[in-house]
Length: 174
Image 1: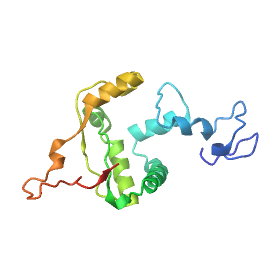
Image 2: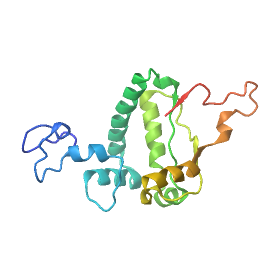
Image 3: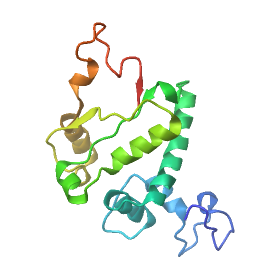
Image 4: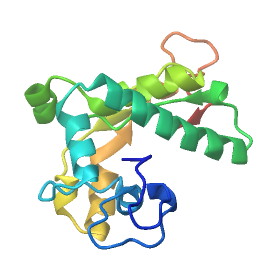
């Protein structure tokens, strides 16, 4: 999909500007990669569905490459070394973890961590109650996220350590 050529202008999908009728190339997908719409059959929905429900090694490798490039660019712009980062994820709900048997965001954070050479991917974020985000408006999502996700306070200190410093002290959390 990413390297497909437009049948009208001959450019690769990400550079196509003509968007001819019937052209279902990547230019429609890239800006909406983070929005999962299970009621559509587009590439975006297929990618996200596969990430959430299948252990598709090639897809995880592809997404890891794509995200790692973007993360590395952002870190360089902020003059942050990947080795000074801790990579984390927002954990999957207990129901979905039981249903699917794995946490796709944990897998991705570990792969990105390995690729970029950061500190071990830690589960810093705990999941509280809260509602399913995809069914909420933007304003409701913000309010729901504030009460649904939080950094586990036990991460701040290492038990028994004299300095009181924890594993995230002085690190950038991605």
